[in-house]
Length: 242
Image (tube, rainbow, N blue to C red):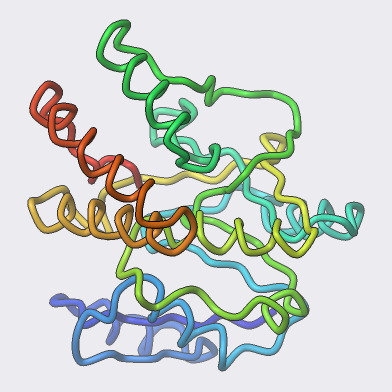
């Protein structure tokens, strides 16, 4: 196993701590915040393992989690990627560990459920392995050879929807994406990028780019129009997604 830490110009001494206390770790220091996609790619291109694991800095592995994720991939050769159950420090399952493609239909039903019934479309506390459209980049295990076929994360996406885009490209090449709730990791959430106007702006920009790339100008126009009243009615902060 190899560990690569990409420091996105953090303002504390965390990079120095890694260098001092974990000399076996490969450390990449960025002089500015390169964003999630570009920084992840920096780590991927210098790694050499058969599997690549994206892992947020605000996560903590539980005993056996990594080994069991790899075992799952070994037992499911059709799987291009998988992700575990994300749980908070309180032990409860977190939202947005997995999901469906953000199509117009999906966003409509998601928004309607939130506005009328104040509930989510998904039950995040699943106990069965299921095939999904995407799993969260907070902890995402991918086969190395797939990256050679579909490419790295899209660096036009600063953050948010980079995992959706990557998983969609895998599925377009015939691979399956799985959420495996038999494996859990703690995801503190919001610690690697605190909620702010900049985070909300990044979310909307990424959604707009995702629609332009995958769904075309008409769908992009429609989602832009629909988001105006939705944001007004809910005051919804997309920064909570990760």
